[in-house]
Amino acid sequence: MFSFLKNLMGKTPTPEEIKEQLREESVLVAAESETPGAEEKGTTKAGRKQEAGSTSLSLHESWERELNASAKYALSFTAQELPPMQPGTLALSGLALVPHEAGVEVTAFVRNGLDRPLRLDKMTLVILIGEDELFARQEFDLSDLGEIPANAARPWSFVFARENFLKVDILLKNWKIAFELAQKKMVLPQQLELEESWIRALSDEQKQSLIELAQRLPALKEGEVNIQSVQLRHSEDGALHAMLLIRNGSAQSLSFEKLPLALFDASGQQVAVGLFELGGLTVRASTSKPWMFIFPKESILREDADFSRWKVAVPQGAQAE
Image (tube, rainbow, N blue to C red; front, side, top):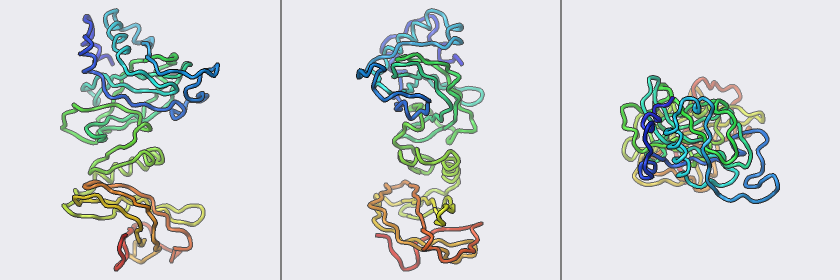
């Protein structure tokens, strides 16, 4: 739990050492943390507008018992070096990542930018490397941190289990810890890019399915462009929702205005067909992007289809625009 603090015991770090330790912050609007009773962003109880400001150190009672005065001073000094917080936000500031017998241990400040105490619930945190590449994601019960005072930074250690790693045998240098919901983009294996709207919309089960699919997929060949079927479900109005993965192995970005698609069942028979307006959907070079395609009830040709296996493809002779 206190691996990071061993380096702080008995000495005071210099400002330069602190800045080298600090990682890019992950910032989340407080209302998005699903904490009950969150007040309007940036407004105090008296209705005054809050200004961006610093957060003071707040230690959980377990840390208070374990740390000596030198370590407490070092953490307090570190908290003062963090960027000013915008009112009404939460932030996660990584300090250190070290090996752990169960995986890796990340020490970070959880910062409360509200003007009132805050208790958090279960949330999914991620470790990202490089250009927002996902290394690990895991749900944590943040209620263990207890009540975080207003405008305070509470240090905590998070152990990411080895079974949640998406990569092995890599050097974790350019890393950060983040709230998953705060991410504008997240890159899964095989350069599968999830944009902010997808990160927020997908369930944990759907995200895990995409991760497992990405890990199984063969690498794209140079110049290869294909469509991979991911998930199919019926909606209450009788439509079929097909989540697909558009894979672009070419050296340039591809944009789609219209895309004709046909849905085939386990017998290979065409079940539905449609022309989808995509409004310039762009898939960058050497990446993949998921998209949801909805076949309305009136486009379905067969009601007795066997979807134990299925696929979606561009109909023979049709072309994307």
